[in-house]
Image (cartoon, rainbow, N blue to C red):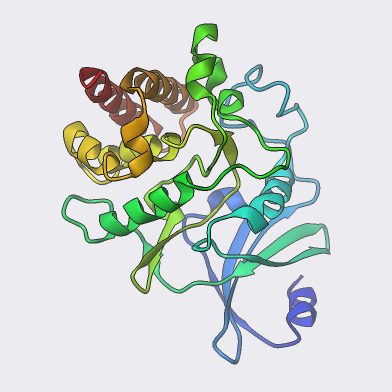
Length: 275
């Protein structure tokens, strides 16, 4: 596999394993002799199908029983041309020695700091505002209802309806800060839905990862213009669905899931108070 990548790049490289990439199968940041950076993530072609972020039965029209991490690569490659300018672009795709590899423009930088008072928060807000203005492209993508409908009642489907492109996982480890800008990376789970969904999900992480109070998270969410045009009752229903999803993942012993579920519930209560 290493030799195939060398041939693809037509140059030697040094590689640094990427942190926080357990779900990627393999992930590394490559440095070329001319100092260019390329980020490569890969999955085995015959990777064992994995359970999605939603239980079996949720989004049955989208995720079938054979869904695998390679399908995530396919989805990430398909949506890449439509992402906001701050997102790294796909450079090439390589099938070699039983691996599917997807290469992106590499960026130096670090994970965003979600703690109160961090200067990164304004940059993250800017990135979320930029994304909230991006319409979903005319390609097949899951909807927010596909992702969260299992955890909602049927009458809440309209709450998750929208035409905006969503990232759906704005954890601090998926936000790279470089040169005064926040870059949303790892688009393995794009979706179509309301423009306030990503700010709501990011606010959960401000509470769970950053240590914000729910009211502090509310203050930051209001700095994304799309947030201010929504109905708090819809956002609360969505956030409670996210809390239920994380409680299911906690039952499966997914690390940190319990704390995220607790943060999502507290955040939903705060949103409901604004209704």
